[in-house]
Image 1 (cartoon, rainbow over the protein chains, first blue to last red):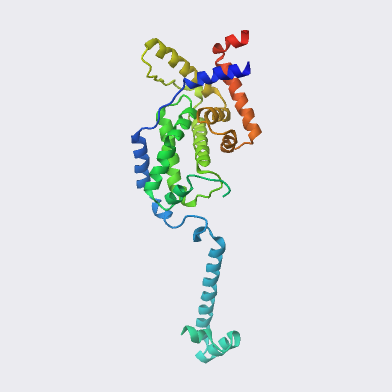
Image 2 (spheres, rainbow over the protein chains, first blue to last red; image 1 turned 90 degrees about the horizontal axis):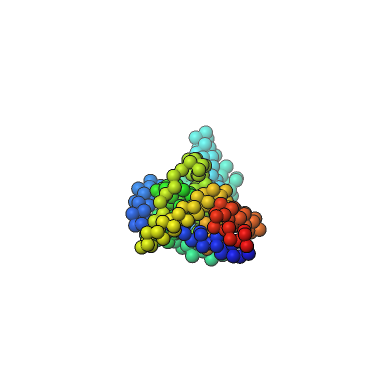
Length: 105
Length: 187
């Protein structure tokens, strides 16, 4: 009985049909996408392998930038406060015979 | 990604701003999406369903660059459409307040057309009276032929719960359309 009732129900449901989309709707959607201001943002990144989503890579790059910045900043501070020789001596003490200061300049 | 998604390559291209890929992706899903939206909106106008589809498609375009393949694209799309329709119905008004649209059947016989339209309108109203998730269950499972497993995923319930939803939806529809089931009740 349930199967017959289900069959009848599906017959009734079949009466309610809806029309497919017409071409103008598709055109409107494409037009709106073309006007969207966020398009440029999309070109930056995409899948999971790329830089945008790779947090580890981001962290590594920012750490390297921060370390280089610190080194340059500390060198400038030493030069400002003392003589060039003091800076080189301090470098050699910290980094060994090859001074970072000498390499950079 | 442990499932095959036929739209994966397209959505990646869309994420890179490829308008041709976007057009293809929209074209591929537009009819099905629109049918789901129109039936989920019940008695509201076709124009409302088209507006919702436009908004959803714009979301795809604007958000494709951050797409993560946690589910099939179509699963995600149908979920977004259904949720947008539910939100829209809640915002605007209850189903009972709105007009019944005309359903045109291209059949040549006038009487037959009238009877068919009458049934179609009653089905439309009955469908509109169902709770949102039950309506979604009928639309996905019966009208769009989506598998129970995927339908459950789209609605956000377990398979068992989805089967219950579907069962209750059918019971409610039979109650709403009981004039057509008299023979079964008496027999």
